[in-house]
Length: 382
Image (cartoon, rainbow, N blue to C red; front, side, top):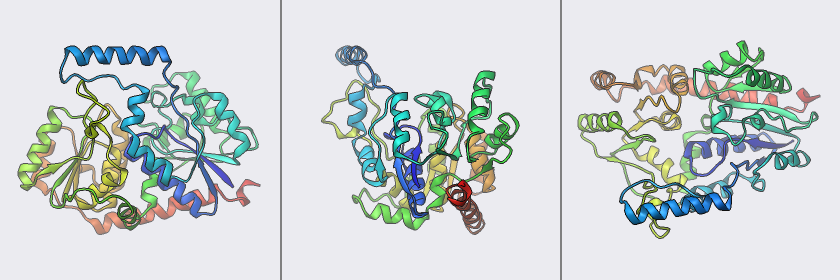
């Protein structure tokens, strides 16, 4: 089969890029061709970009240290390293697609589509949520979801959206989701009783495979014996948590991320450019301890067997954290308050049963690969 893979736009989200990398890698390993469907948010109009640039210049003239808007040109510039990885390592990629017509045209190039993983079924995160239920595919094409995620627990969706989702999912050959709450919603609200839960695609690859990928690229900095902080949303609680953990372990911290786009931004300053994807991966390999408020930050901590704590990120969706940590019996590593942080410190920051965790990971990986193999099996398509 020639399989299209549809996920969220791939620019500078490390977890999003690596889950696509892992999924396409394993689908090809099962003997199929893949093409990443490069579905993007609509480009800003010339007038919109002009307005953004004008406002940014006004801020740069009169203010210091203020954030500025990211134009299409700035997005491309700061994503040059991460986007290069996408175009080099993810196999064949379609031309950029910005509208429905472009997606309908893809029917002539593929035999089916896998939608997933990441929060592809969270309407506000997508260029157009209807297309992530594969409404653009002709009836003769195979529809599969792999580890699709709604991203949050409180799915208060209007009836028309639920009806749309249910109608389109009924055309899917195989449906799988990433979170337990998502599975309940698909079973109870969308009527897809045969849907199953599978692991995020990044778990389908081994630590050794990721290390091999790291060694393929630039050296990066040596951060062994330090705490890797992968914090998407810094706030007072995150700062206090990092300080408490750093003091308790007696270790320095480091980040792998660019500066925020602010009024000091220039295209000549490399500090605003996202580091290589493999630099981010290498941080998990080298770190002594990890603090993350990111779902994939927790995932790669588990894959690399590195002790970690997860700062609950309610804005980005706690359902993902809860489902992941409960799967590996690591709920106690999720912190939402200073009391939680103190509890984790007192109970032992590095107390992890990696033998049990790895056994569970191997078991779930095997089950998930069986799902993927069966979903793509020609025999089951007849």
